[in-house]
Amino acid sequence: MTFEQVQLLAGSVSSVIFMSGTLSMLVKTWHTHDVDSYSLTSLLLNNAGNLVYWIYVFSLPFGPVYFLHGFYTVATVLMLVWYFIYRQNPQFEEDIKEHVRHITQTMEFPVVRLNRTSETERRTEKRPGSADGALFYVESAPII
Image 1 (cartoon, rainbow, N blue to C red):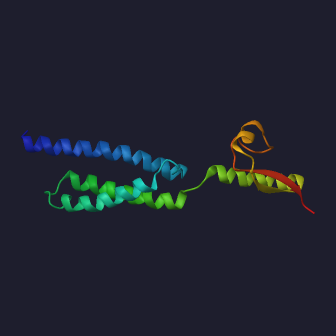
Image 2: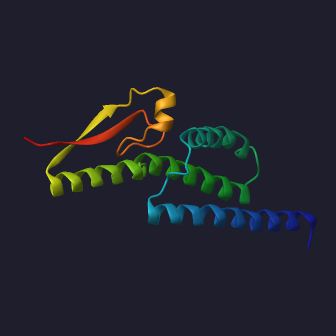
Image 3: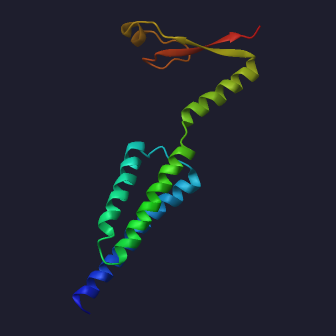
């Protein structure tokens, strides 16, 4: 086996390994729709970098790098698209569901109030439904 054949084999094997790692992440995101760990800045920079890197790739002879970079380009575009489609705030959704449950069970409407207490009072005073240091809290008001 010549050195060029070893290089081609090494490039092919490493491309499959890199693609397998990325593919498992894509499959997980496809099934779970969980993109909370994705950073929009990172996705945008990765896509821009892939486009610029194609200039370099096109200067190389056809080989495994074309498949690897093509895969990464498709994967990062797909991740960016999924970021905008699947991006959610699960805590916000859970809060909304809890408020709807509360309203339907007690017929009281949640009222959001600004927490205008000082930092010292916030540490010592715990209002119902407020988190420590919260800037606002929720209390219930009867529906008339």
